[in-house]
Image (tube, rainbow, N blue to C red):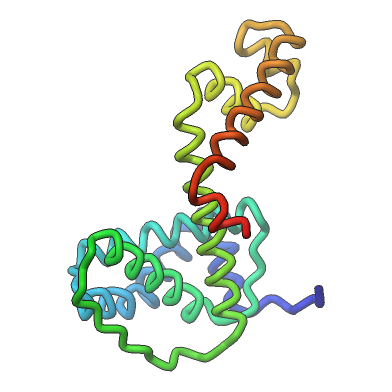
Length: 193
């Protein structure tokens, strides 16, 4: 894979990861009006638009934090595409037929589409994981959440008041159960094929 220089708009991604309120406000000021206008023209209202914008910012934050997202296109095109996809998915869920797809020429930037595609896929995988994670038992959830926060299994075992051997064995069983649930989901084949 060839190295691509980060776009100057990488500052928005970095600002989100650093939870920089100035950058977050800047994203709302510069990029939200276009999204709000689009959603209002397509069976939505201001509240729907604000929800979509917030969900998109959270998705970008999660992907940037987990996958070290490097933006190689303008943030505007990337952000708008993600918001648009989230809104169209929302309309599909609602069964709304009145969708006006006004394909504006944003910037037919392949990188914007590639980044939007990667982020959408990341978001869908993340939601599948969360959905299945919520289906495993409380003991498994507690153990796995502890391992997400604490890197040392000795510390995890101590924090949960169990032996190291039990914590390791239980973690393995819980991950196996979670993996089984994820792979049994109809969404799994759509996302991983």
